[in-house]
Image 1 (tube, helix red, strand yellow):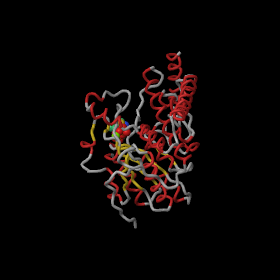
Image 2: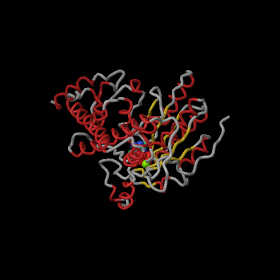
Image 3: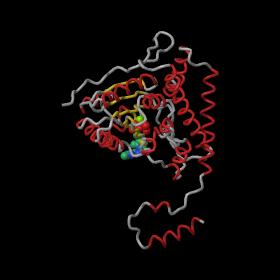
Image 4: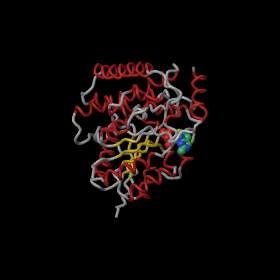
Length: 354
Ligand SMILES: Cc1ncc(C[n+]2csc(CCOP(=O)(O)OP(=O)(O)O)c2C)c(N)n1
Ligand SMILES: [Mg+2]
């Protein structure tokens, strides 16, 4: 029988403000781990900022910006082992970079090019999920399957605040708790689902409260604090590996960029609030923490940024060098038994395309 633990109401934080709020620390993280976490944050940040530029230059298509959501991605992935499975939504499109997935592959995905596909089993990173919450049952099923096979693998699914109103989220969370699937449910509460604010999305006071209804613990964490996210997810992973089932982690942040490059948030968002939220930049918060520990200075930070920029420059070149895909690809996986008219239609298509 699952033990129902109360959801946490306070935001967990580790990083102080360099003034009245003291810094904490996380057991088991050595200096090199703290620097690795920084490299992950900067790689994700650089990917995101360059992608907005590439979009404006017409080099990638519509792009879902994740500016200031990097801490919850880098912190959570660092709490996993490489055998654990990641199920990203479009908001975590580049999370595979932390597993060695080439940045050019993700850029190709946003270019709508088949080179943007990867074999999930090569990185234990599932396909980027665009339908809201439909990957939650997939992650629950994979985690359950691994448990049935006696493998120690854990899965983590990333989704937004809006996703918690979807049937697929409910079904995935419910079955995961019932079968004690080794799953971490990581909710990016950025307080918007496109133009729908959290207050119009749910009457729950906190999203972490929802965990109790499923019979799993809920942890509420500052989504700008990479160390607090790491620690919360590590707890979830330990529970999962110990056979105790899923954990819901609500990472609280604020979407201070447009929903995606196609969105105009000036129609519905308060610009003063956005400006205030941008002040608490999760990368800058962590840089200040590492500087207080003497683990970072301007020169070292600059070197990490340069490395990430070089990665992105090479990646966009590689993505743009991919030869265009043939038009028949649209149909080549659509039919088990192609209709006789297909070959004729393809001939027409090739003519039009040429
Ligand atoms: C099943 C489904 N319904 C509707 C949409 C359209 N849609 C795209 S993003 C979005 C909002 C999702 O908000 P949230 O879950 O908070 O994630 P966020 O975009 O904030 O990361 C919606 C409704 C969709 N992609 N899939
Ligand atoms: Mg949201």
